[in-house]
Structure formats: C-alpha cells, structure tokens
Length: 207
Image (cartoon, rainbow, N blue to C red):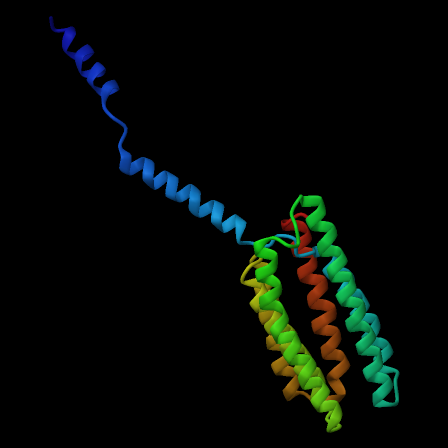
C-alpha cells in the first residue's frame, strides 16, 4: 500500500489542467515578436550604402577642384541623384533576395518618415540658391539627411537611426567650422559614415 501513494500523486499531476495564464503569456510574447519583425524594414542596403559612400568621396574630390560655386553645386546635385539611384536599386535587390516587398507596411512607413526631411532640405536649398547663400548648404544637407535617416530608421534596424544621429552631429559641427572645410565634412558624412555603417549593416543584416 505504501507504493500506491506516489503513483496516485503522479497520476494527479499528469491530469492537472494546463495553466491558461502561462499559455496566454507565451502567445502574447509570440505575437509581440511577430509584430516587431513585421514592422522593421530589413532591406536597408549595406553594400549599397558603401557604394554611396565611395561615390560621395569621389564627388568631394571633384567638388574641391571647382572654382565657380555653380559648378560646385552641379557636382553635388549629380552625386545626390546618383546616390539616390544606387540606394533605391540596392534596396530593391536586397528585398528581392529576402523575398519581401518594397510596398510592404514597414517599407511604406520607412518612406513616409524618410521623405519629409529630404523635401524640406530641397526647399531650403532652393531658397538658399535664390538668395546666394551657398555657404550654409552643406550643414543643411547633412542635418536634413541625418533627420531623414533617424525618422526612417525608426522602422528599420538599429544601426540606421544611429547613423542618422552621427550625421546630425557632423552637421552641427559643419556649422561651426570655417566654410573651407565644407567638402571635407561632406566626405566625412556622406562618404565615411555611409561606408562604415554600410559595412555594419552588410555584415549583421544580410548584405
């Protein structure tokens, strides 16, 4: 009879109902993780960002060789168009490899957050060009792009908003330095920062 008691306790333990509270917590954790993955854009291109950095370094060199401000501005406008094309194509290629879409909810949130600071930067640039204020263009470009990256990065991987804050820091420094350092600051921000963070993104987030 002494041996029957442990068997009865074991049977009772096996027949105990599953704790619904524990199951609900597990389900909520799974749902939260799924939502976090679905709201994060992972198609930000690392290798594409590195290429954008290389072209920015080349543009900084050619811009420094220009004597006339209009020629200098043309160099950077061409670089802006080239960088946009590289970034878009690289993002499209990475999303295609990952089997995701650039029309997904995270991608749309990224775009809608990324674009307003850029549009503001374009409007400010047109105004500065109209009034002949070329010296302030570089800090404004760096700051507006940094703000765009921070806003869009809220829906992307962690390295993206960090890169945006680095742009903002360099943009603030560019306002303090003499205007002769303008091309150097452009090379440091759009060149070196893109290369450094592009390498991090490529290594940690699949290219």
